Length: 220
Ligand code: CA
Picture 1 (cartoon, rainbow, N blue to C red):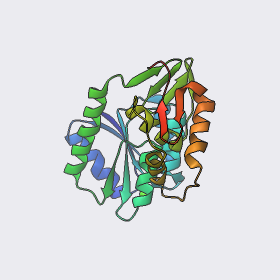
Picture 2 (tube, rainbow, N blue to C red):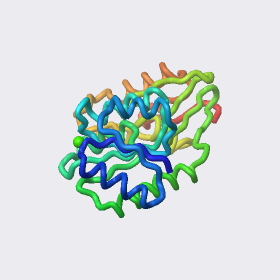
Picture 3 (cartoon, helix red, strand yellow):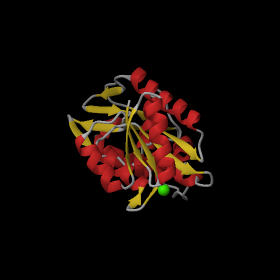
Picture 4 (cartoon, helix red, strand yellow):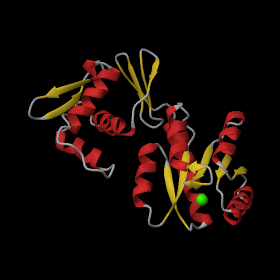
């Protein structure tokens, strides 16, 4: 695999390059987000290993920008032991996996293989609902072939509905998905996100079952 390492720790960065090369991967190592941006502009990577605290910004923001541009390159984030909240934020932002520092290089190898296997096996993960096309793994949505940008919370709601398509999903279980983001949610949060999704992807996509919850509609 061609791997981009974004890591400002010199010792760790050097060890990663050596280890990955030893495992037969081609690894490029940058220490800043602007250099990562530049590398991605010219090279197609199979995976990005992303540290979250870089000298010129937050890895999470970099990841969010990447996903917003529709870039689906698999990303593994590296977080510190006590950063549970950031880890959740990273996964919700579109990271494929995380690894906790200080990590064992063998563990990293295992996670790399797992992520690449998942991509190889998943192949085409897109689902069509009428004029709406959703790719759950890559977190890409389109309406009439035009890309639609959804926030992480909108994806959380939509993801639950798609994975339970054909069934009514209760408001409470959708609230649980939103609670995963860690902040307090308003009592009407589910209605708000459903309404935003309808605005972006069409009214027919999500049907309200009064008193029961929501069900994914459309000509799935
Ligand atoms: Ca760092």
